[in-house]
Image (cartoon, rainbow, N blue to C red; front, top):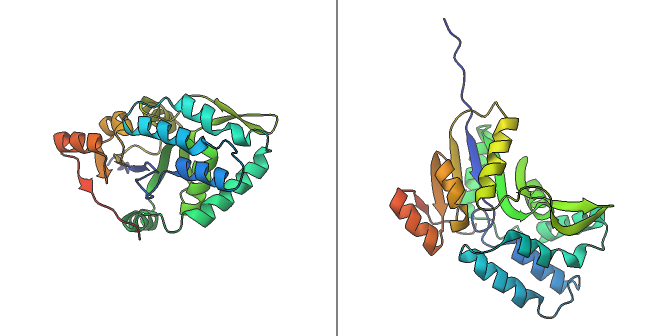
Length: 226
């Protein structure tokens, strides 16, 4: 009698506007301005223009990193990481969608595999993953030199098609995950990964992703803060 091989599924979550009712990168930029880390008086206006391009599906992620990282490139990495941890702990408690909390708790209780896959910078995403109790996270890796973050991306950024590349690499490194991939997202920028996943749930999707959801019969979830 052949032994039955159990399949292990993977639940993949985007972060911004999927698990939380905000964009973590934008919040971090505001935090840098409020705490006088970023001193350009037009910093937030410039960031908004970049995020408008993101919403249209037109952002170059290298441009965003080149814009957003310089304020902290002269602060030691360890200190930046501590600042980001403090930022997350003091900012995110009221931003998490109620349904996201419930779903994550349910998946953890069932010992399911969970992956946070975000196009935000690794220092932010890793801090949020720790805060949410998610053990596995993939994000845009920022190049570190001599103990300082730079304004350059290291490797393939987890953005648009890059999310698929990063996921495939993750699956190769985790052969125990051999079942269905379920993906939750709000953004049209994640369409390539939506098309790769076995199941897709769109969370409060923007206009462009909502259209794709209707075309592909992907469920549209309306989540609210808890």
